Amino acid sequence: MAGIYKAYDVRGIYGRDLTEDTARRIGRAFRVVLDDADLAHGGERVVVSRDMRPSSLPLAEALIAGLTASGLDVVDIGLATTPTNYFAIGHLGAAGGIQVTASHNPAEYNGLKFSKHEARPVSGDHGIPLIEATVDSGDFPEAGRAGRVTSADVYGAYQRHVLSFLHRPAGARRLRVVVDAANGMAVVDRPIFDALGVDLVPLYFELDGTFPNHEANPLKLENLRDLQARVRETGADLGVACDGDFDRAAFVDETGEPVGSDLVTALIAGELLAADPGKHVLYDLRSSRAVPEYVREKGGIPVRERVGHSFMKATLRRVDGLFGGELAGHYYFRDNYFADCAILAVVEVLDLLWRTGRTLSQVVAPLRRYAKSPETNFEVEDKAGKMKELEAAFGDGRIDWLDGITVEYDDWWFNVRPSNTEPLLRLVCEARTEAMLTARMAELVARIGAPVRH
Image (cartoon, rainbow, N blue to C red; front, side, top):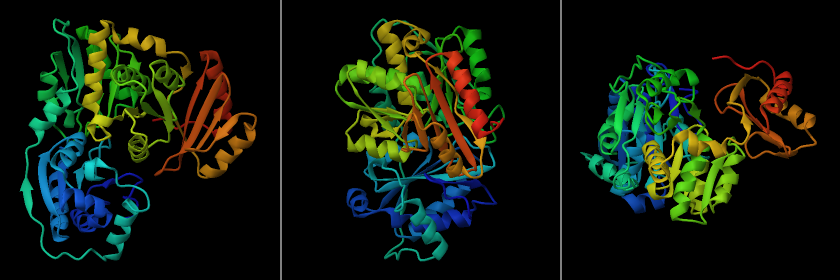
């Protein structure tokens, strides 16, 4: 089982790393991360749902057996996106929840995403490491009784919740939207897409956990090619690429050009701040400098945060922030239990286009202020040592260690941070001009090594 316990979830190859027996034992251990506040809020009820992978149903059944053996009652909401799981936890007033999914990973993988009451993340020393230690020791919580299993249909309530964010003006022109579901869980949200008042062009809207068309990972440009082509072919106003459990989305404009999720974060923040000014907006430290600049211009207070949903959600709650976004395509909403929800991001982008009457490329243009690299990976065994080398080499810059090393100069900056799970360093660099970016990237590559090619 070694290696399946990640920083934010459990993930591994089904049948080898993650088996039904492992899922059952994790279910028995889950109670250890539910504290008095969780149990006081939600009794002993836990929401369980799953994605469309062939292995998800047997894993969910084993997980439920473990949860009930520990005395927890399970509300099984069946096939659902991860954001629907988050919503159900809050809507039903449960103590926590677990989604069976491996998100964007290939078909042979599966995993578990955990939450506490009101969709609060399970993380840190009292989170997943505690589950791992309990599973390894076999010292499971005593159960005074066996838990019960009930089912619930929360989709109608979830649909009403999502559509409450929609502000389509009367008489607004119909927008044509291509959505690439990648054969993943966005398919289940077809009724919401149909209710948006757009001309939907569905792409790969057949549930298939073997992902026959392409990986359900919108961060890889090769996975956007079919979407880009369909946007151009159909004259669509925008395209949306979804990941496997549909907690992330990436956008392309009407020309088929990808729009960075950091810039989408800024655009959505501007929309929300127009109705609720003066609030905090979170962005992860890989984001363009244009993001905090734009948030300030729109009357908000930008807050820089390290990468990871548990950090984003905790800080958003702590500062009572309005919204937050990550470069990976996660978008967090205060009015959605501070949780991420990709389809809400789609709604906000549509609202922006309707309100302004402009194209997506036009509303993004003012944010394309700098030249920025994609996140680039490097195989490095001594990750800490390499970052210390960079600290010495760029000691004349402004340096912080919030998440890896960030070095800032007036006209350029970079961040290098370690992967939690692989011998990789990840680099993002931004500069005032393309020529400067090219030069700085060459300098950084010379110091770090050859990038990993995927």
